[in-house]
Amino acid sequence: MKSYTDLTNLFNTLSLNTAPSNNSLAGILLNDRHRYLLQKYFDNEASVFLRTVGPSKYSLSSSFAANGATSATLASAWGHSSSQQLTVFSSGEQRLVTYIAGSTTITWQPPLLGSFDGTVTSASNVNNTISYTLQPVSYITSSITNAEAVIFSGASLPGGITAGTTYYFGNITDTTFELYTDSGLTNPVTITSSGTGAFTSVITTSISTMGAQAYLLPSNVSKIKNTTITVGQLVYTPAPVNSIQEWTKLNALPYNSSIPGYFFVWQRQLNFWPIPSDFGDVITINCQIKVADMTYADYSTGTIASSSSGSNKITGTGTGWSSFPTGVDLSAQNLYITITPPGGDGLSYKIQSFVDDTHLILWKDALSMPAPDGASYKIGQYPLLFDDFHDIIVYWALEIYYNSIVKDVEKYQMWKTTKEEHLDLMENYLGTKQVNVDLSVTPVMNNPNLYTYVPPSQ
Image (cartoon, rainbow, N blue to C red):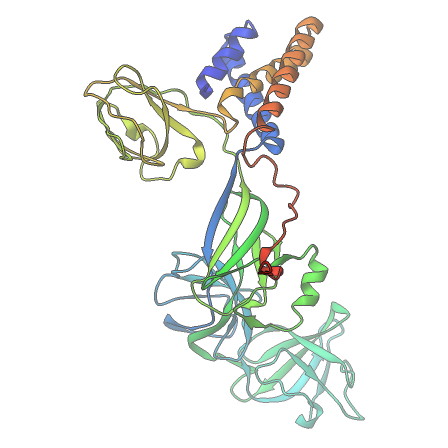
């Protein structure tokens, strides 16, 4: 294994340039080559887990007026996965509302309208300032309570209003609102009412949901291979939907079910149809995770105070580990600790997190890591490539270096050949070992449950 520091030092030595600027260039080239290699020979697959959120009713910390509202505050923090849910408000309106894990704030667009109350008395064409009277109220043939559209009818409608045309509400105040047609926002009609106001501020104290259809993808998810939802003891594998057009047609009507049929990724959200109707079913996202840039230099300050086999905890003396982020899951950074022989076993163990200056937690329990007090160690950041082939990214970086930064045809060809030889070795190695190398093609499997067992004849 070669750490990030080992690799940059190797690049600097082989390029015959140890200047700080060359060291920075090494970091850029190595990280780029690392990501490109992982696209084909990757070892950065993972499973990410979420839980379904079914329909329910939620209390708000305080009541709010529906008219114009775009946010509200829950009585307690959202304790489920971040998601969007079709939500019904006291005014009867529905919005796709965003709920964030650990937050009490919920948001939506467009704003709520409230409910119509009062008698329409006049209207004017905004662009041409034409005023007229809308009497009697029977001109309005569609119900506009808890709605977002209105239709007028009659033989003698005033100018600006067309019988049978659907008008949509625009800007709203307590006494006026604008109407727009399907043709756009070029010529809105302003409606004025008398009475208590065009729209009342319906007070909302609680909301109800149909369940979460869209789940915000964790930030480390790069490419989804497939998803499953575990309902009881059954594991369902929804089929992917490949376009927004197909997804829109599928969602013509909101529909709930315990059994998911389809999934669709859109704007960093994982969507399911039908909408999951249960709470707590496990969503498994099998994916390729994003690769963090290697930036951590080797670290070996202080000594090891204690470690033991079968434990995931290590204690140091004078180690100053709070120079690393503490209390944070660093497993994606691929940091490893190696306790130097003879005090340690010389093997590298992945670090989960740093607790404080002198305590860290391993990603998994160490199998053979007893270390006496005072043992030396090294913490390094390593590529996600297979251990024996870390140096390939150095040879590839040198190929680019001698083809562009320092023009040298002979060295360019030498490092290109060296890189290709090591790639061939890695391909041969991967072809003879049971590792998940490329999941881009779904294997065809025979399901034994589809076959009838016929016992042998007696």
